Length: 96
Length: 96
Image: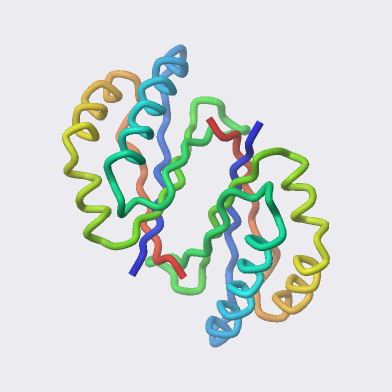
């Protein structure tokens, strides 16, 4: 079964541009390397400009698992860790 | 600028199957009739099985506006109104 995911990320004040640049580069790598990924789209809250939401969908639990283990994903998260205000909130959903 | 949207819908107990069938038919119509729609994907919460989240993205504010005014969308919402526990929560986001 396909899975959806909403990741809510809070970025530190003044780090938005750097965060977006790194995350968009990660997005390209996800789209280029993960056939099981269907949706991977970064969005920025209108209510709080430090909050971002990534809308994601994977064709299987295995595809989501592979995403989390990808080197480029782990490398990007090491860099992003210095730009965010805490760990992301992750909500996993069943695609209908 | 492209817009993201998360619609959170609470369905009445016992109405899930009917809700899903109508919403999936609406999804086909959206994909067939709205070139400005990029993402339109129904998901079901794992935490509360009566809660659904629709992950959406439009290439412009005009495309989102057209979606809201489409006959099939208005017709589907008339039917869905009898199946949901209240109006949807809508969060509109800026795509990055």
